[in-house]
Image (cartoon, rainbow, N blue to C red; front, top):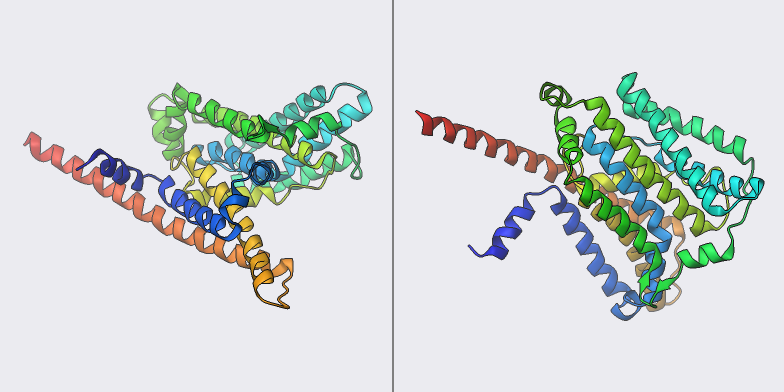
Length: 349
């Protein structure tokens, strides 16, 4: 068997395989519908990254929580918290926007710590606790900023929406930074412990791992990435809005599942990236597909409702495919362990 085939078979058994397949499929479809020249243009790629970076980062922030066996659907409204804190500190205190971003990051970490305490210490169900936090954070947002207001200096949002060397989107560097940090963390003790805790907290504790501490670390990582997502949202909108971003929570969770992440010790950050990429690309594909029909068919018109309906139906089937495949992968993995165990028993007899 060749090395390439061996690598493919190994990758096929990983949680990220279905998410990668779905992402590549819609990516190719998008290139065909939009046209290679337009899709690969610097302006198009820059728009794709800059306008969708908050969703990409929010999905990546959700990944450590799911791997460790928790979740936080209030992560979407937390982006708005980072946004309003950053804007109001800059606007009301008369300090640099960098200070505002730092305070927004601290706010994200504080809410992440609160969610961790409710779930890992008080032992509330993560879905219930994070759902309640949506209303708490939303209220705090309105107290800080009672109406949309504020403005980001032009130099900041133009830098965010710029191209480095006329080719590389500046916003893509944020994504690369998070990926590099995650790759480093996976080589540390935390990288091993998070999967052990997500797979079985009781067994992890018996092995000398503190599940509460590991989930706290995962929450802090989530808080940092959420802070970066909130900063990206602020630079993208160039203003403050206390009620924006709430939908990012469920969209990020959906993207993680589509990418192959499971609840507790199953999946990787690659799953989150592929899942978010699928969500972003399929919406882009549907938009350009209807535009193509508009140019081809005289008198053809369609509302944004139908575009959202078609993209949501495709996302729904993507979720079903990923869930079914994940079950098959888990069962195949379990059977592999059973065969290996039996083989070891027969060899010792």
